[in-house]
Each structure stands twice: as structure tokens, then as C-alpha cells.
Length: 588
Image 1 (cartoon, rainbow, N blue to C red):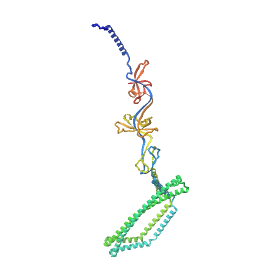
Image 2 (cartoon, rainbow, N blue to C red):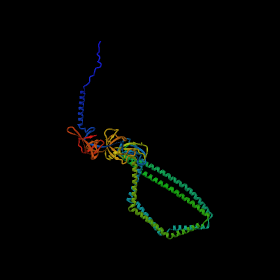
Image 3 (cartoon, rainbow, N blue to C red):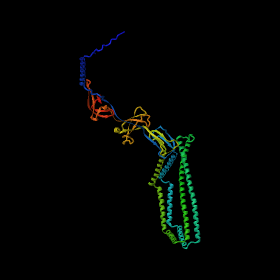
């Protein structure tokens, strides 16, 4: 059994000596004093809380960034100038690249071609008339004019000789008739006269009915003749058009337009002869239509004048009967006496002054015939030539108009570009307001961006632009500022301006509507000194920078140095003077 010794109760613990404690406190105090003295004598770090950057040489660019969407430089909705017509051919499809003046859509030109041919014929006629006027009258026309002069001179000689017996007999008969009428009025009506007057009224009314029926029928026949001649003209024009295109086919290909077989020279001339005959037939048909219209106008005039004359006869017969039944009044007796006086005066003129008047009239006829002969044998007057030349000019203008209408039946590209839309098909009827084709210019593109009022003062027309198409990626496209709107956008919550950029696609597959990020180069410098913009305090010639200078022993000091600042960008500042390349500037 082991016995564990127990501590002795009531014993004292060991304690450190006081001298050791005091010595330790003195050592600590000496060390703290040395540390504090060292810290107080050490200089402060001038770069504490700051960084440095070197003055570098290189290119500096001030850019204004903005985003927008790609648009074609030119977009045109092309329509026909004329009233339109039926589409004959659509020569392009969407996406096709076309050259300037390339045909896009053609209308049916058959009617326009016929109008052109008719205008050509009218010009030929006007030119022939002008040539005939310049070359003078034919021998036959001169001979006819000489005969008219001789006939007028013969009539003058006869009139100068004496008044004819027939003239005298007629004048005397008129006197006797007017005297008998006066005597009858003075004597009053007779029963047989009343019968004759009633019969005359009945006959006049019957004649009015007959004239009304006959003249109306004649007018309707003339109207039907117009329609018949118009149909004949259309047939002749259609035949001419067919002969024209057959002859053009023969001239171009030398084959029969229907069988395709080769033709001999004689057969080709047959087609040309048929074209000439068709032209003559068109001219004759046009003359027929004009003559039918003249006949119809004559028939209408005949109806008006015939009915007017017949109605006048009825009114006259009725008046005669009424007068006869009423008996002569003072006015009628006075009129009858005046008729007698007039007839007697006419007889007196025939036997005296009448002869002088007749002679003067015949002399005028001779002068007119001689003037006509002089006109034919002399040179044409300036007015005649002017009228003939004016008719040629008018016919030429009508031909030009017909050619323009024919040319306008083909819709052409006004500029080289890409077909963006085709809105018609062959056979459709299009009007002048319909745009069959939409054409865009893809040689250059536009990007319209919005620039804030803070940056708009840096942007001007002609500045270079770098554009990145987000959907395509890759290298940026090169362009320039095309236009800066002078007024701010009205639909923007802040003051901003619309700037239009023009971009060279450089063969890239750009589509209208794509999103583009643009950087407008507002200013740039080449091979210049620059420092971080944060290192510069102030502007222009009053700016300063802090320069870190390291001594040979490694001590760093900082001095403020005045500098001249040039171009500033968002992160760099151009230094025109005050620094050299490689120096270190302080950024706080």
C-alpha cells in the first residue's frame, strides 16, 4: 500500500524580487523612446494615397458615340407617269440588282404604238404640204387660175355692155305683182282666195310632218354611218398594227412571222407593201370618219333648217289665212303700198344706177381672180410659210408626245440599286397612283443617330465615322457625317439632335433596319504627348499637373508644374508644353 505525501498546510508562496520588476519597466521605456524619436525624424511619403502615370506619345482621338438603325441612302416607290394600263411583263423580282435605266415593268403598248404610227403619218402629210408650198403651184393650178381671170373679165365686159332683158322683165313683173296685191287688199277677199289659203295651210302642215319624218330618218342614217366608219377605222388601225409588227419581224429576222420560214427578197417586199397599203387604208378610214361626221352635222343642220322652214311656211300660211279672213287693215295696206314703191324703185335702179353696181361687182371678181393667179405664180407669203411650218411643228410635237407615252409605258430604274418590293403581276390593271416597284440604293447606307446637346457642338458635316453593325460583328465600317439637323427632336424627353451618317457597306451583307453603333471622330491628334485626364487641373494655358521626381538616392518629391493643354478626351489630355515624354505625373 502506497502512501501519497500531502502538502504542508500553512506554508508561504514564492514572490519576484521588486528590483527585477523596476528593471523591466525601465527597459520598455527606453525602447519606446527610441521608436518615437525615429518616427518623428523620418520624412512623410509624398505619394501616399496617389498613383503615377507616365507621359506618353501617340495618337489621340475625341469621339462621340451614338446608336441608330441602318437605312438605304435612297428609297423610291416607282409608278407610271401616264394613267396606267394593263401589265404586259414584270422583268424583275425582289432582291434583283438593277442598273440605272434598266426596264422593270412593261405595259401593253399596242394602242400606243398605233397612236405613234398615226402621229408619224400626220407629220409626213404636214411636211409634204410645206414642201409643196415651197416648190410652188403645179402647171394645172396655174392654168385653172388663168381661166378664172378670163371668165371674170368676160363677165365684166358683158355687164358693162348693158342690163339683160331678163333683169328688166323680172323687175317689171315684180312691180305688176306688188300692184296686184295692193289692189286685192283694197278690194277685199274672195271665196276662192279663202279656199286657196286654207288649202295652202293644210299643205304646209302636211309638208311639216313629211319634213320632220324624212329629216329625222336622214339624221339617224348619218349617225349610223359614223359608227360604221369608226368600226372600219378600228379595223384599219388593227390591220396596220399587225402589218407593222409583221414587217418589223421580217426586217429583224428575215422569216415569215407566222410560219418561221425564211423569206425571199420579193416576199419581204410584199410585207413592206402590205404595211404601206395598211397605212393608206388607215388614212382613208380616218377621212371616212371625218366625212361621216360632216354628213351627220349636215343632216342635223338640215333637220333644223328644214323644220324651221316648214314651220315658217305653216306660220305664213296661217297668217295669210288669218289676214284674208280678217280683211286688210291700215298697216297691211301701208305695207302693200310700200312693196309697190320698192318694186318700182328696183326697176328704176336696173335702168340706171343698178348698172353701175353690177359693173363694180364684176370688177371686184376680176381683181380677186388676178390676185389668186399672182399668188400661185409668185413666191409664197411669209404668213403661208409660217402656217405650214407651224402645222409641221404641231405634228412633230404630237409625234413626240406619242413617243413619250410609248416610252412611259416601260417603268425604268432611275438609279442603280436593288429591287425591294414588286407589287404587280402580268395582266393586272395599274393606275398612275399605284407603285408597282420599290427600289433602294445599296451602294451607300444611312445611319440616323441621336446626339445629346452636350456633344452636338463637337459634330459637323464631313467628319469621319466608324460604324459597327451589331448583327454582323467583325470590323467597323467607314463613313462620314452627312447631315446635322438644326432643330432638336420633338419626340425626345431630353434635348437631342438627329445626325445622319453615310456609310460605305464595303461588300458586307447589310440589311435596312439593322442596329448600328457609331463613333463620330470629332477631333484627333497624331503623335502627341498626353497624360491621363485625371492628372490635369484647370484648362488651356492655366492648367497644372503634379510631377513625381525621383532623386539619385531614391527619394521622391512632387512638384506642381504649369502646362498647356490641347485636345481633351474622356480619359486623356493632350500636353502642348510643360512636360516631356517619360515623366511621371501624379493622379490623386
